[in-house]
Image (cartoon, rainbow, N blue to C red; front, side):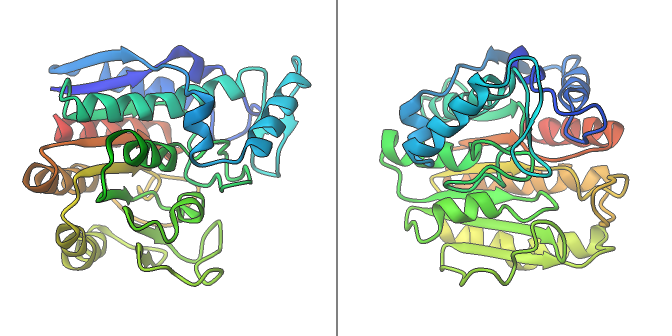
Amino acid sequence: MTLIITHSDCLAHQPPDDHPESPARLAAVLQALEPMPGLTWEQAPLATREQLLLAHPGGYLDAIEQKQSSIGDQLVAVDPDTWMSEGSMLAAQRAAGAACAGIDAAMQQSSGKVFCAVRPPGHHAEHNTAMGFCLYSTVAIAALYAVDRYNLNRIAIVDFDVHQGNGTEDIIAGHSNIHYFASHQSPLYPYCDQAIVRPENLVYEALPAGCDSAAFREVWGDRLLPQLERFQPQLILISAGFDAHQADPLAQCELQTDDYGWITSQLVSIAERFSQGRLVSSLEGGYNLQALADSAAAHVKALN
């Protein structure tokens, strides 16, 4: 049985009306999941400051809090893509809190598989920088929490969002207990494929524009998943972005809804073999509402 962790506060983050990362995204996902059988539901707690400090310095957290306190009912641009409204910090705290609560549920076996239906996304938020719609690096926080709370030494983060998870990479680069396995379109935002020397714990494959189902499944099936298996993770975390779908307006890949069911099934199989079934997924991108809803449903169905 799969646990869904969410909270209405995640709908209160309100970028400008024409912004692609809108509350309608989460509403569409929840509408798709609510009729599905075999799910349990839980309210996301707020991440504690101690949990956020695992990935972000205190000065950064203070700056976000100060910006939030000055907003009132206005919108403030953190960067050209990333905005804060009256409910933004609370939403981001719920997202990170959901991921940490998911770790607890998986590790304590109240639920082996968890999907965090939350926003804003997190994988572009770097150690000391908000960017790419993201304020806190949700999945990186959860991975570091799993190390800190449960003393795990082989945690895998899997990221199939169409955009490179530069924030996750920035935070966990060189961390021997956490390995990152990812695919992303290149060139595409955040345009940093060549910006870093890749540490050994960051494993990713660049996908060309126009990448279709066959190419995606080859990259994962022949290259990334075998490396994940060799790592023998004790816990798998997923940055579940659905914006490589052919209908998505922010990229140029050609994935189909079934591809998300396929990759999820592969990850569930690996989790069953190596991780006692422990798998925690958190929503990242996906900006065509119908494609997002259908893909998230396929993802959760495969988890379940």
